[in-house]
Amino acid sequence: MALTERTLLGPGPSNPYPEATAGLAAPLLGHLDPEFIAVLERTCERLRATWGTDNPVTLPLSGTGSIGMEAAFANTVRPGDVVVVAVNGLFGVRMCEVAGRYGAEVVRVDHTWGEPVDVERVVTAHPSPALVAAVHAETSTGVRSDIAGLGAALRRRHPEALLLADCVTSLGGIEVAVDEWGVDIAYSGTQKCLGVAPGLAPFTFSERAWERRVEIPPVWYLDLGLLGGYVRGGPGGRAYHHTAPVAMIASLEAGLARIHEEGLGSVTERHEAAGRRLQDGLREMGLELFAAEGHRLPQLTSVRVPEGVDSAKVREQLLTDYGIEIGAGAGDYANSVWRIGLMGHNARLDRAELVLTALRRVLGR
Image (tube, rainbow, N blue to C red):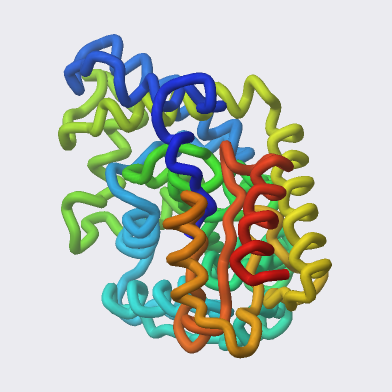
């Protein structure tokens, strides 16, 4: 779904994130090697800074962003718990399905795809929810929702409810402030704005959520009671749980180090500038943006396919002729929307100009 120029993924001067690439290429350490434990410690600390949290349980889960979603519900949902889910795209739909599989009574609050979450509708959907979930940056539509506003409204109306946020496409691209916003559980993915290969799910779990966690979840691998010992340590040191993906964690540590060296504020400004240029250029070409104005993500732009244009052929030509990949839409919009990502190392003005130039040529505009 992201804009990718294939040469950027290899080593060399064209790679603006050589540290993350080097992390994957470095000699492998054993997963219990003291040097790797130090790498993991640094990674968790940098994740806390990136999330904007002091949560002790903050770690990269071994699996892609979807495993973060699974872990969130596995450790918080008991059969019969009421879970309110704001649905304004594909990943809200997926949260409903995952919560239901863990026995939740799912209260689904549907919105028009491409529109942000209506905070008032969500917080009034049920008189006593155990958990409320929403997507911060909906990957399927390119729309941003107000998680800060949702957290504030939830604290006023349902102070006992936990708040879960899907931040797969937002972490490292736009502001995320877990503690300030009152988010209890959040997960992300490495392959979006963090600019690292897919394979890990940055995850954070508040002390409040920890106190109310399911003691023995129905899935062993994602049991935070077991993983918590791995993260927090204890009198006997770290507890072995599973063989960690050491190369991926080394790569994530390097990618996070690069982000914090640049500065989180500068990184978000770079994403904003690149996305703004792309969206302005698309409108100049006469194309219509899909996500609601005022709520568009800078890092992921959704645009309607012009009438009479074959979406698949355009995407194939961009990939074949220019080495640029853009995504199709999702669900009912699979053939009528394109999704263009400028994330991580591609969130730069020259990448925005590259995709605009290629698209103009392919469309003959």
